[in-house]
Length: 434
Ligand code: FAD
Figure 1 (tube, protein in one colour):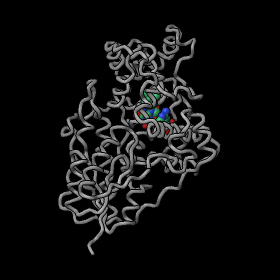
Figure 2: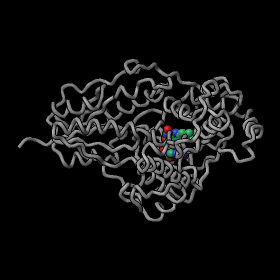
Figure 3: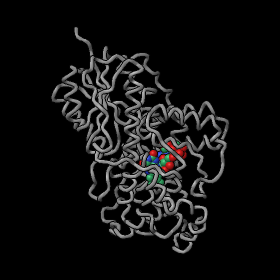
Figure 4: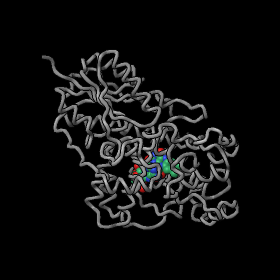
């Protein structure tokens, strides 16, 4: 009988550790065929004029895939890299290598699930199964104390019930050895130019540098816990923010590290520290947005009332905001930092998003699309979910947990709201004018 081969389709799970699809493929097959596709879909221009992927994230992704290949090689395996539509590439490779089954991690957002449906349909024609695994969240979907359709829309209720009635699974073991079939054309990593992008220019003033890949993710995890970051208090680069968060989001977004790995690391270092509690809370927010997408689909980011007035186009205000020229020092500093580095902290995101939506009254979806291009840690559910939350278009706004940056009733009066930011003008100064 011929060898059984399983194709492992890597997407946003670019790691060897705690990767169930890789482990299961090693256990169930004689040979494993690891594949990554650079899908041109993600490198095109959108209808709003932004790119789906900006150059900081694209560079990070290239580094992450290169690192995955290097790590797989240390296990005796090889990663096939292709540029093209997965719906064409996966079936071609399945045929070429006489694959018996294809494994992947299921996504929740619309575009990602549509791509897997296309792959599934193409494989189905060859009588091949695309097996879906669940592996992007901290809490496994099947361990939730409610079916997906009954997940509470309120984050507060979701958090309370999940923490009380569910547990985080342990990480899965790392395979000892990965045997691939003989691969003659593993393929080269594309260049940024081939993806239609230019090399990003690193700003010397940036406080964070994110190197793509599992190797760098594990270093960041280690540093965060061992170098006393948890204990560091103080102001971030923009002056007003206590910025001692994990900075793991770019790696979590493409799965160079799993939320479970982070959780169990927190558990190891837990000493009642407020920061480790915060980290767990933030991972729960991440889960919440993903589960909301699972429950509501695109409706989660749509107005509940179809007749609700659409936001004004207000393009001019939007352009001013994106170019960091609003004249409000703190907002401009944050937007400069985003444009120059691909990363701003959570509070800065909340503030600039709130300003665009509630102050400039511009179309929030344009802001979300702009973040989609610029953010190095862009993740569909987290980005669009947070934006919709701030725009108040869905059930999430009814959560008892309010976002710190949303102005109170008093702040909503323009003068007070702006005054709050003006107060931080001096501290923000050094990034204005990037
Ligand atoms: P930590 O505070 O250390 O949190 C640990 C992890 O929890 C993060 O790495 C992230 O994966 C997750 N997390 C933290 N806060 C949130 C949150 N509010 N919602 C969902 N997940 C969270 N995060 C993304 O990963 N990708 C995005 O595209 C994204 N877009 C956002 C857009 C807006 C308008 C806002 C307000 C927030 C967005 N966030 C997004 C959430 C948050 O800003 C970042 O996750 C956080 O700043 C990353 O820094 P950190 O890794 O130090 O976070």
